[in-house]
Length: 187
Image (cartoon, rainbow, N blue to C red; front, side):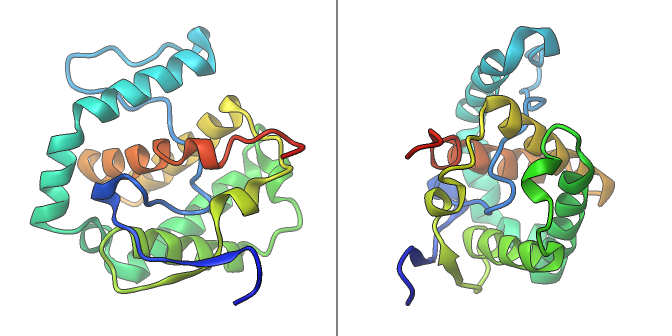
């Protein structure tokens, strides 16, 4: 296997799964009864609210995953691939992050990302590719970029009819990967 690549078989309920492209969690996730972070509070406050919502929902998310894996609730590999195509499309036109996707082979990225999510959500697929840190080193992504990409994921899931539970599971898995994506440029 080439240097910088690894084989991943991870599970969302362990908090270590997500996909390469959705590496930036959404700000809009909030548990019932909690006010979502306000846009004028800045990215740090939005991420803090996301982390709190994910911590509060951990047991519920684990129970949903145990009852029926997210992989199946997202429509298996084909459904996940369709989702990732929509996410990549949204990223490429999102003025906040589109620069990171200029010149990217959208279909190849969507497929790689779908394999990553499928492997991490209960599917039989195995992701064989670069780890998240390797992919993002030198990009200089910040919290605002992370949130912008997460909003694209959230909107893509809604546009494809995925429910709040599935969206929450994906977003919280991504939130747990934030430190592998927001890296110093010179790392």
